[in-house]
Length: 460
Image 1 (cartoon, rainbow, N blue to C red):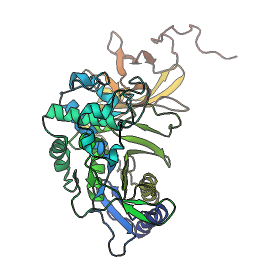
Image 2: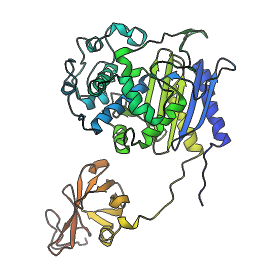
Image 3: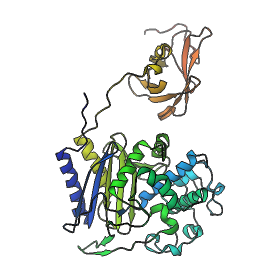
Image 4: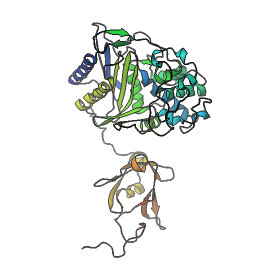
């Protein structure tokens, strides 16, 4: 018998609403919407507003700023998966004449390209795109602040280049490609380049007085792939589910997982977080969160996903500054994770087709020198190698067609694990990237590099 809890418990919902209410009050936001996704479904949303009777809901549009970058990164990864480009390709190979062509596509995705954070000239978020009609106007005369690949340095112009790359290779405007390849397949029909009612207005709140004034809403032009989009909590819930599990109509699970892996070394003082391929990574409350923050004049936004917990938190506000939406979204995840921890999947035996006597004979203890490891079977004929006591290198391995395995994580990621047999066909040892694992620790006659002392083990 199984039990399903689709709706949140009343106490959990009350705690979530309290967090949103505190954020709106302390952050002095005209309005703030929060939402929680659990196992791919929107299970809660709540909001607070300064205007009675005009509280926004999960269907109200807010501008999401740099969360837009994640969408642009997905479009680039789609091109990679189709074989149109490689992530280590220099930009110049596909987009000519930018003046920054030596930077690779992967470096642009992870903000490791050494490009400036902002455009030259007027504050681009608050000025007309007509001031930047060409990429040269976005990059300026000195696009690089440091050599490409050296370190993480957030760059809005870098994502302008990626958007132009998408347009060049697809032969269509970035927003049209976005709608066809991501928004429509995921059912995100309330995510648009320009606001569509109902939508929040953007406001600036005076830092020293409880007064406010409207912020302008500019079309970002070439900079659109870095921050143009408007969206809703409900649409971002659908996107959060995609970032956790992938979607074969958009991008497969393996490629989405690749985006979530750290790709760029963090800057000084930033070791609690990192950046993947278009995704921010954060360690908070003992869990890893992936997603992105966003801000444009009049708006702040955040989407965090905890893949391990099967949860996502969303926070949207229509104020230039004040509400700490990154902390709010993370707290929404924490509140649910602590109040209603995820139920583990029921144990089930492996399918019969994935187990045979030869595989079973390889399981159990193995020794790398005097370090004791255990080998156990995983799904789809994969294996897991883990220390039996003390510290050690744990790794999962995927089965290869030739009978070997390849490491999927940690120290042994990409390394080959293979069974080495004696002339009579019996198993001699396991070879893992030249490391020898034997059935006994330093057994005489075993194939241990350097040999084993003939006198064997001895006492004092």
